[in-house]
Amino acid sequence: MVLGAVLLVALGLVGYNAAHQAIIRKRDERSQIVHELDIPRRSTESPTNTKSGSIYFVGNATVIIRYAGFTLLTDPNFLHKGDHVHLGYGLQAKRVTNPTIELEDLPPIDLVILSHMHDDHFDKLVQQKLDKAIPIITTGHAAKALKHMGFKHPYSLDTWQSAVIRKDGQQLRVTAMPGQHGPGIVSGVLPPVNGAMLTFETSGKAPFYRIYITGDTLIHDELARIPEQFPDIDLALLHLGGTRVLGMFVTMDARQGVRMLELVIPKEAIPIHYNDYDRFESPLTDFQKAVEKASLSHKMRYLKHGETYAFTPPANRQAGE
Image 1 (cartoon, rainbow, N blue to C red):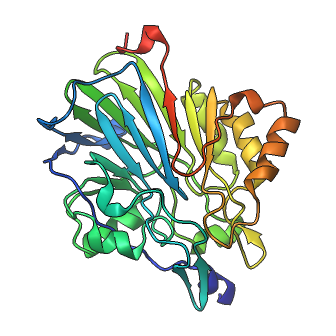
Image 2: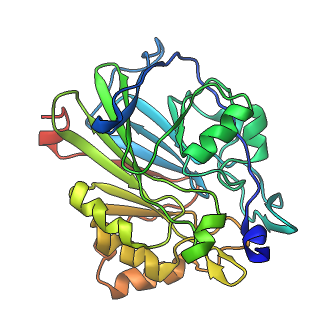
Image 3: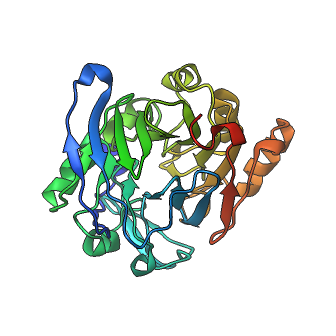
């Protein structure tokens, strides 16, 4: 019980910055689509582009994804070097990097993808300053906390459930992927975590780009279902770092990161969440060596903080054909 209590991580709560309305309709859970959101296109936005997209690495697990008219933000963490996140019962972690942009300088965001409720993924600064009207797709545990803090549009997904978001003729399907934040019984005292499968599509047509975000998971048996359900992942964002608490890993280290690549078989992958806090014990260089040893280097796209990866879907899929 003492170990479990020590491993609990204090809630870091949220807000957000968006000028839009979301029209939500619940659907039959047997369809696995449990939320639908319609997001209007802003008058200042450029015409929708499905020929190219981008991933901008802010730091930690925070990225900005732009594609098919959507602008998404993942796991917002805007604390600065030297700031601490509290892990409960006297444990804490210190940030050793700065975010590459400030919270106030974010572009207009359509949607937040929040893997779980932990201070290094949704910090106190974010809690105070983000617009409480922005839609946030997350776990049931995190959605309850967000509602308690006054956030108006948190939408919870259980594993394999989906939310469909429509904007300007395009459609994004967000499906919750299985996650396990700690080994064995330790996972039961840590906040539930979701991975996310982002499938960009035109309604009624085949997907034209798919991104898998692992979330803070370790390798576990249920992950084997992912390639069965989604055999065509274009890009994976891997939460690495080998975060260790009381001697136990609670995020993937280099070895598990390689195993994830072998398991879900993405065409390309970008490691994130690997050097921003002093509890990360598996450096990116270890992962790079493991990837090379496994002959998977051709899949990797490495980003430094503040860098952007531009992607181009195959020409026959750019319009959801």
